[in-house]
Length: 503
Image (tube, rainbow, N blue to C red; front, top):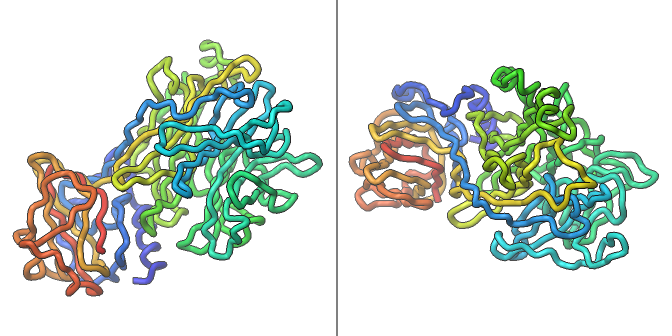
């Protein structure tokens, strides 16, 4: 199948997915004998972020897996230009062998800055004295933008992978600005090193958008994409797609609160909810998985906020991080509405809000997610009075582990649509209980198993593997089946299956 056809198929599949805590799949029936256009998975990793790879199933379900917060205070405010605190709009990447963090800071005079920190291990961070942007006469700062005080909200920093991008502009920064004498709006700056920045043009690339606007080059479609704020009537997520990074064009709403979100609220305590940031990204290990980590903002009723002594009772409330998935970056669905990353214990440093940073850090067996937290809610603070609040912390998740196909101890099974693949081996990311087991059967497009590749031939998989090669009576070579339409039948019990890949 052509790549576009494949993505259209899986995007349509997401649209039909129900919004429940655990997505229970349709009752098992043998896939229809008539031929359907095979999905071309090539030798790319495939994640179970929806039911696209489940044509029929019995007693299996899709489960969103939560990362484990480390409780680390990776980066805290301790500089004069961070006098009020470290805030919500941050970007992280691994680059040139080190971890780099562009983070959001506000001084007690109200000035807002994008600062820079580095780490070798992801836990201990250094704030280098760069001497680039001064603060109150001091040049020994780690501030990188803006070059002078101005109305400013730090946004996304990303490495531009567009093949036509010159090396002098390989780092891009998106910022909400009001430069002296210029129009307010969303601006883009470029840099050769991620430290010295220059606006790409002296006018906005997009209208004002007061959030952590996300931007990256999407190599799947060969365009830049931006995720921005839309007010309609409360906060929603819009998306732009454009060839020229200095002209974003018009956005379309792609992610929003809905009636179910509002109906679930205690109306005496909350007045509504919306989505503050998106932290949207394309998962770096596959071609067709987009992830979003939106911060859900639950608005206190003004009377309730006043009773709690809020500094801004008309715009206050807690935030936690939810999770949404997409196959094309346009059609987004939530498999459940539980917090993906919740607030910390009451009274602790993470008890008020949580905002995901832009970007993720990959390790051979896990993903690191960084997010900003504080011990106050959205509006309950005083910039002049409060000192050194806010923390950037970390959570850990299994590689590819965002969603899994699960079966209980009694067992279940599912069969994929017809697939075309290239490669010689089938690799699973899978975790079974001590008494659990997983087997894979390879079937023709129509009919029963291919000789030698039945579940009875499959060597049982028992254990916890990020990379597990599947074998059939010791045989692993699948090159004779490459390029031919086949179905995979997974028979599992007490098992979590995260991803598969032919390679």
